[in-house]
Each structure stands twice: as C-alpha cells, then as structure tokens.
Length: 639
Image 1 (cartoon, rainbow, N blue to C red):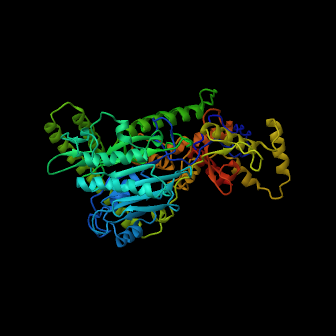
Image 2 (image 1 turned 60 degrees about the vertical axis):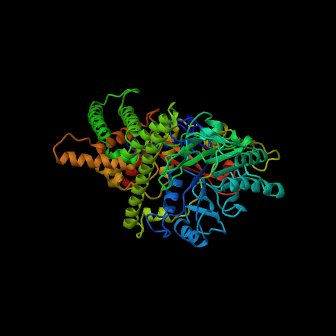
Image 3 (image 1 turned 90 degrees about the horizontal axis):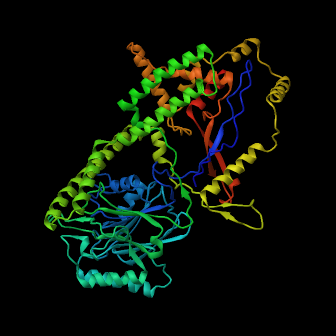
C-alpha cells in the first residue's frame, strides 16, 4: 500500500520571535507505504509478481566463477527485469551445480530443479525464485516428468495459493504428443495435487501458423494433445489473447534464420483477467531463445502508486543540467541577497518562496533530462527493437521478413550480451575494490534479503472488537492511516495562542536548574553562519533516503564542490552554502512560510509484530527533505 495524502497531518506552527533560539517547525507528514516503485507517468497498478520463461541452453562453462557461466547472467536478468519467478528450460543442473549456485547466490536466488535421468547433463527444467521479490520459505515441488515437467506450489503476495507448471517439451513430434498426454494423465490420476494456475516454458510446438517464420502449421498430433491438455486444465495462451494479430517470436534458428514462438506462458481463463504486460524480450544471456513474461496480480491486491522520485545520480555529470542549475543558482543568490539586504517581505514573494521556486525548477529539469539522458547502448537497443517490430508487422514475403528479422534479432542479442557483460565487469571491479573491506557495499551484499511488505488490508474497527471489518481500498486505507497518526499527535494537546505558548515555554525554562552562561546565551542568539551550514552539510552522510522533493545530500555537496572549483578559477560561482544560510536565518527570524513544503515529509509505516491488519502494529518513520535536515543539524551543533 502506498499512502499519499495531500492534507498534512499537522500544521507547522510559526517560530517564536528572537532572541530565543528555536528549533524549526515540527514537520508535517504524508504517509507512504513500503511499496515497489513504479515509473512516473504510468497509471496506478496493483501489487504483482512477474513470471517469466526462458530456455537458457545449458550452464555455459561449468565453473560457476567463469565469465561464460550463465547463472551470473540469470541472476542479473532476474534483478534488472524485476522477475519474481523464472521458469528455466535446458537448465542442465545437478546437485553439485546447484550447490555452487546456492553458495554464490544464496542471498538472491532460490533454485529448484528436475533433471532427466536419461541425460543427467542435458535437458532439465528449473524454477528460479527472486528472494528480493517473493517468499521462498513455503514452497512445494512435484516432479511430474523428470527433467521435463515440474510443478511449483507457492503463494501470492496476499498469501493465496499459486501453482505453476514449468515445462521443457521434447522436440520430436511423437514424443511431444506423448508429453502432453502424460501430463494430463498425471492430473487425472492425482486429484490431490493442485492443478496449475500458470503453465510456461519451451513447448517445442506452435498452435498457429502465424507463430512460425516462414509460416506453416505443426503436425496435428502434438497440437491436438496440447489443446486437450489446455481444455482439461482450462488454460489459455495469454500473450496471443493480448496480441491476437501480432507477429513476434521467441526462438531464432541461427543456421536457417527461421523463427518461432515456441516459448509460451498459459494461464487459467479466470486468472487471465488478473494478468497484464505480456511481453517478449531479448536478454543478455547467450541463448537463441527470448524471454516471455507477464505480471500476475489478484482481485484484492492493493493499488501501488508511482513511488518516490529520487534525484538520479547519473545526472550529476549531465552538462545541460549542470549549466541550468548554475545559471538558476547565480540568479537565486543575487535575488536572495537583495531580499536580505532590503528587508522587503511579502507573503507571496520572500526568501522561502524564492527558494521553493528554485527547487521546483531544478527538479522539473532533472526529470526532463532523466528521460533524455540514457546510455548509448540502451538507445541502440530501443531503436533496433522498434525496427524489428516494424519489419515483422509489415506485409512482406516470408523470405524477406525472415532474412531481415534474423539480422535484427542477431544484432539485438549481441547488444544485450554486451550490455550484460559490461555490467558484470563493472560489478567485478567494484567487488575487488570493496568486497573484502567493511563498507556500505560489503554490508549491502551480505545482508539478508527479504521481499518488501505490502499492506493488503486494515481493520476498520480497533483490534479486539467483536465485528472485524476490513478495508482493502488503498485510498481509504491511506485515509485511515493518516487519521490514526493525526489522532495520536493531537491527543492531550490543547488549543493555545502564540502568546500562551510563549508564556508556557518561559515557565518551563524558569524551572530548569542548569542554565547557560551569559557568553553561551550570546552565542545561541547569533544567527547561523556559512561555516555552521558547511559543517552541518559535511556531517550529513551520503546514501540516505531523501524527503518529498527527492533531492539528496550528494547534490548539495556537489554544488558546494563546484563553487570551490569556480572560485579558484575566478569564474562566476554559485554559493549554495550562502544561499542555505540566508534561508535558514529567514526561517529562524520569520517562521516557516505556509505552502513551501519545507518541513513536510513522507511517513512510512513499518510492520513490527502481531496483526498486520492493525495500523497500530506499524512503526512510523518519516523521511524529511535534506535542506530541512541540514537546518536542524546546524542548529543542533550550536547547542
């Protein structure tokens, strides 16, 4: 559940007048559940698990640490594509190879497999589960046909059962026909085994001439046997249902240039309505097959929002953005200095509103550049994919389409493999530098991985109430959580005027036994200096979660570093520390201006224990904007 309310839980109170040193106004909150981020610009979607199928054509080099071993690429693909469960054909696994995989990827992957006793070093079907995305501690497997058909029973995010049948069908028409009949016979005689909600993998047969290039029909025997199994299990070809007239292929025969869509995912007809984003895509694994995937949700799954936007680190070096921030920054510091000198102040135009406008402008520019600035190889891949789609969709002779499609498919595969290889080389270099020392990188790769928790429902009435009614609508759950925390913050508080508040503070201060000296009092009354701000920024750790605006500490530090460089070279320099000093002192003197969102934050409810449907069992943490945290740190350092 992602909770985002426009109405703050508390209204920031104005800061008391000087000379009393005051802390910044208490932050206001927006509530945000820990949910997978979704790209901005897409419609809200329900919580899902992404399921894929891929024939990897064996392990590659049997040495797990060799660059040609495919399991590093499998792990990379699972991570990059956000795959929760992958059905793997031609897994070529043994107990010894599984031990190697578990030793290297114990924190990332859970692998279960079935091997063919007739050819132990070939064939084989496996399931790979991504520990970051799905639960792996409560799964069950049933071997239907050794090395060819394996049933996985697990649970969806809402704890409802999910059964997936992974297949790697024989290539021979006669064996293929018998394969589907044997699976049907198994479920007819084993009624206690849950029938699959999903069936996927390399079927080695197509049901329609449209799924082959050049187009032709497959033998009736295996097609009819598969059709009977589909009818018996009430399965449908989800990709073809979604794309009824589209030509796309998952297998490319390099020698002849022929292509086919033999890798497919079937789902139960009632489950199909809960699936979306059916896709066929090229991966960076050396194989002549492509990945087929889809996202599976459930009727009662909560809606997942767009997630929090965070300033992209790769944009720190973008020349256009650097120039934009520099020019806007120079204009900002000139305007703020003039406002500070003049003392002129309007509700709609002052230091704080000017600062908010600057942040809004650079954030908008960063979002714009993030859509444009992509790696060159990613751009080439997108262009080739678009060109391939056009070629396959055009009304061309089969031979011409086959030749053009084969060339583009091969180019795409090489580009994906190059990108995957570059990513792995970069990871290896980083691991050599930081993998053997206690560091943030070491902590990240060694900590236990758990899938993110999603709030599926909340109790409408307090826990222990006789009538237990649940709310499952995400927006209404957001309102419930907001109201709960709003009530907690307001309990025991009385309405007070600013004068009464000041009077109460004075009474409390008079009761204090330990008092500051006159010298300390003078020091506390002084405004923040540029040195104070610089010290606070320096003590702010990198890699911390930002607040509502998504701006990280790293951006402010980089801007300060650029100021030092430009000043040394006698160039016009944007002094971010001086700008922050002016803003902080304006807040301390005049209080916080409504509408600037300076003290607003995300509130994230984290589950503690007991009933997950009771909002009281979640510990809230707030993510504050980094400029707000620098302000409070600078004030704290003076105490």
